[in-house]
Length: 355
Ligand code: NAD
Image 1: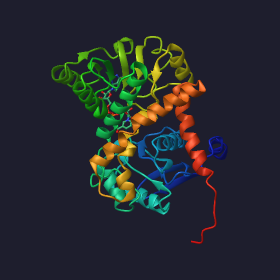
Image 2: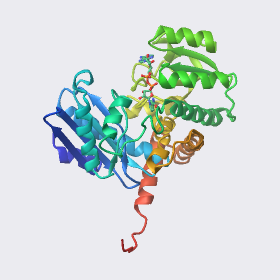
Image 3: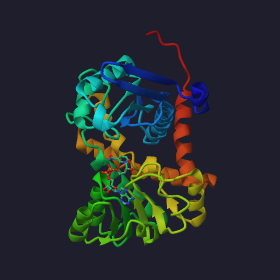
């Protein structure tokens, strides 16, 4: 693998390799683009089979954060870190503090947070060495409630686009995954009068949704073919793929899962089928919007976070407008919205200003 050619392909700024023999730390920090501000993106711990796999994942995830942060209207660029190793074996206070020192060494060019296989305690150890970390229990904390609220607002925007009204009363929504986000989203939808179809891996969660929210339980494969207004993927990525796309009988796809389209062509096929796809990184950005107070050093305000997250409605509407105006699928319209913002801010005239 040619590291510089990989970086050149999508114009990455910086790739940092962090090694500390005494703690066993092997980490990679990828900074994609800081035109809009410091690169924000969580740290993922994963047992990658090869270093190359870890580099590619860090690069891919960092670029995804550039688009997500730009589309959310945040003054933040995109970055991501991966710590290589089995999360059940490698974790220690010293390892996270060693990583924290590397983050501190970037002097604010990269701001981290929790991602896959990381806990609040792990984040607290990193915070012993650097303040360039967000989403701590002492700050904005668990992002899932705001992510769920943002998906709810984005779903309203999509329903408005298709049916001419935000009202979810009587609309049918098929939710895949009742985890941290899916469960809260189901509650919000139930309160709004939607009829729910649900599936998840944990039977107890299904039973609870049936008993408390009047949801109808369906099988894990059955969820794709449910005739409904909205299919809401809130479990895993790549669920819109060659096998599932022909089964879909929904009018809208709006859910929290990351990387819902297995390949770009699936976004084109949804467009051809007349299904309105709400781009994942636009609708699921409530979690990053939730950390605005942490970044600016203000005390966390849930009210402010909700006010800002509600703007996901407008962001989704803007994506639909760009898609309609340019005759392009919504997933491409979202990229265009993010790229246009970065390009326009990047073009601001440089004036002499003695520091
Ligand atoms: P979670 O792990 O708490 O929940 C995922 C749920 O999906 C689990 O209950 C699991 O049983 C279920 N599931 C897994 N595979 C399934 C399958 N094949 N069929 C049906 N159910 C299945 O995760 P979460 O925090 O709720 O996040 C859900 C999705 O949203 C993920 O893709 C995540 O990356 C994305 N996301 C989450 C946040 C957040 O704030 N938590 C923010 C942005 C994006």
